[in-house]
Length: 228
Image (cartoon, rainbow, N blue to C red; front, side, top):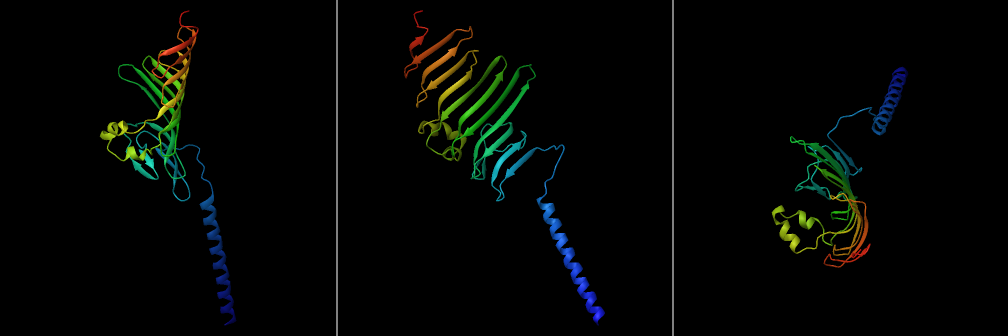
């Protein structure tokens, strides 16, 4: 009887020890980092512990539409590879996209675009580089976003967007710094309505100019002077 009792105690102790080892091993496997020397993947979703989406890295075929508070809506014209950023509510608030190719006629196109968005709005800061044939442009832009949420636009059919914008203030570019399609380099400062006020530019021929404009876009003063 005593021998059987000893055996049962021993069995219970061994079983308990094995259970502790298994639980500890499972916990260690759950928390350890997996390392890869190389990985091929079409899309990676970075999420918080509660599942909130914070970043997407994707190829062109699996690139998401517009995601607002975790709900995905179709994008009217985005077809690219890249990376999207999302705020704490799971709403898109910026991204990095890129692409380029040579078509069957030999025409080269290339683009890169980094942007950051306002809360429930479109981009307010961008860095862009574009090439289309012989036309090249690259620059930095600062934009004032309107006071209406972008969901007001996204939840109506795309065919109604034009009428919607007739009654809603559009975003306004305030600053542009970069290389323009005519090969000049310029800094343009604009008022809150998007009218150019000051343009500092180096023309294609290398001549520098500073222009002051009125609300209608007319040059009212210039250095060097207009009559020189």
